[in-house]
Image 1: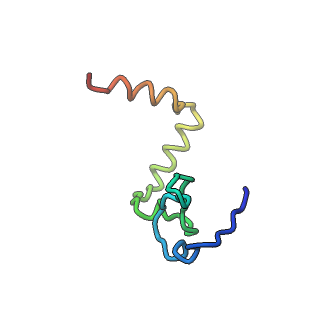
Image 2: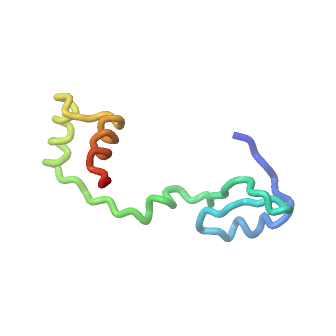
Length: 83
């Protein structure tokens, strides 16, 4: 990954807690900046704990081939779309 050293407004980036757009001096969009906090996007998502039974069931489904590819899942979800 390339590195860019900022000369102006770098102090503002250290205070950020959420992703922001980065613009040049003329207002042209350059990209996004995300603060260096691991899991910042995932802290807001509550994921329920899996029970031991659920884990065993998932492992069994994987072993027996009872899994679906992303393409299969997308195709199925498209059949559920309301026209």
